[in-house]
Image (tube, rainbow, N blue to C red; front, top):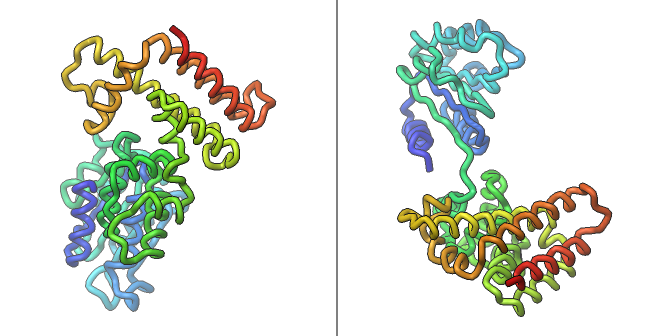
Length: 338
C-alpha cells in the first residue's frame, strides 16, 4: 500500500485533518476510496447538509471553489469541500491563491483524475506546503500478484503465489474488479483463513487446473499430455479462455522468455530487473529459457501477434474454437522445429 495513501487513511481515522489534499493519477481505485472517505468519515451525518460541498470541475469555475472554501462552517467545527474531476476545470491554476493561504476551518479535497497535476505548478507547490499530495499510479502487471496478496491480508486471507498469479492473469490490473471478487469470497466464507484455488473456482469461476496460466506452463515446459487436457477443456468451455486474453498472455510469456535468453547471453547479474519479472519467478523462467531457442521464441511471438489480430476480427472469419485449434497446432509445429 502506498505510504501517502496509508497516511491519509490513518490521519482521517484519528480525526487529524490537513487543510488541503490533492489526489491525482490514472488508478481510480485509490482515488474513489479517498473521495468516499472524505464524503462519509470527516463530518457527522447531521453536519453534512450544511458543511459538505461536492463540486465538479466541468460545472464550476475556480472562483466558485474558492468561495465555497472561504465560507464558515455551520453548527460544526469544519466544512469539507470536494472538487471532483479538477482536470476538467477552466482556470485550475488560479486555485493557487487560495492554496497559499487556506482556511483553517475547511478541508479541501482536489481530485485530479486520470492524469497527474503539473508538479511545477503553484497549485501542487502550495498543496505540498499546506497539505498532502497523493498520486495513484497504475500497478504494473509484474506487481499485481504482490498487490493481490497484500489486499488479501487486509481481508484476512492468506493468498498463495500460485493463486495470486491466477487472479492476476484472469482479472488483469483492474484493482476495483479484483477487490470486488476477493470481497465477494470473503462475504461467502467469513471464517476462511486461506484463499484457495478451490474457493477461486467456486466463487469466481476460474478453474484451478484448467486455466490460461496452467496451459502456458504446460505448453512451454513440454508437458503435452496435460496441455491437451486443458486444450480440450477450453474447446468445451470457450469462456474459460477467450482468444484475445489467451493470445496476449501467451505473447507476454514468450516475450519474457525472449528477454531471458538475451539476459542469459549477456550474463546479466540482476536477472529479475533485466527480464522485468519478480525475483521469485527467475528460476522458473531461466529454466524454460534453456528449452527454447531464440528463433523458436521469435516465431511464436510472430504467430501470436497474428492470432491476436484474428481474435479481434481482423482478416478472420473463424470462431474462437477454430482459431484456438489452428493456433495451438501451429505453435506445436514451431516447438517441433530443430
